[in-house]
Image (cartoon, rainbow, N blue to C red; front, side, top):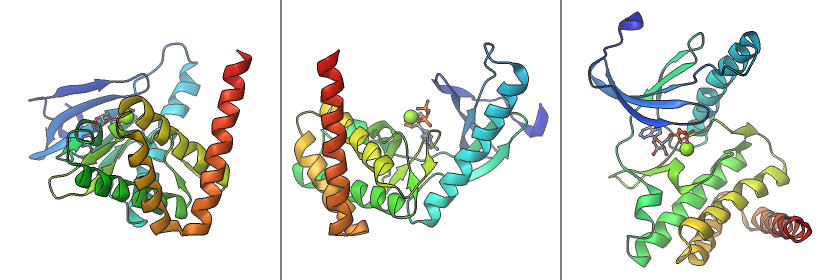
Length: 221
Ligand SMILES: Nc1ncnc2c1ncn2[C@@H]1O[C@H](COP(=O)(O)OP(=O)(O)O)[C@@H](O)[C@H]1O
Ligand SMILES: [Mg+2]
């Protein structure tokens, strides 16, 4: 096979709408391969362009996040022509699986850490774009590694920061409703550690505004 791929033990982890994820062994390492498959409904030239663009964008922004002090999987290879990214496999559990299972004390410190990391991203002009507890991996060493930067963008504006955290809040309300309130509060405390109280107040006001807008739209429907 091309590029010395070994076909042994290739496991499809997730077949997403946009990309498929495989767990495999590459040069004796456990890696994740994220592959963007062609979309038949798009014009081929345009499809190639979109897939190449996303294939370079995601590792680039993951690297920026790492520079900002936010753990992300190390990128081992980017194959633009094949719309393929090979990255380090991060050992650990999705935050989604552990958040409700741990003690209150552990939960709050985990949320505080998550908030601190989101703050670092935002402070450095990185909007994650899909802040759910599935896209965070808690490692056995207590680090939180952020994955899935496919929808990320660069911005220092208040609006996208608010939208980013609003999605986090909605995820907590829907998936972790028992602890949603205390978790979001701890996240915002951690966020303030990174960006300061003043900016946190502004972002919090923005989140409220987005919530009101959402309700208004729901009322009209
Ligand atoms: N580098 C990685 N190491 C370990 N697990 C990963 C890694 N990247 C993704 N995952 C796991 O696979 C899941 C799906 O990957 P993700 O990049 O979020 O794809 P999708 O865009 O389909 O949501 C993640 O929620 C995470 O649990
Ligand atoms: Mg995901």
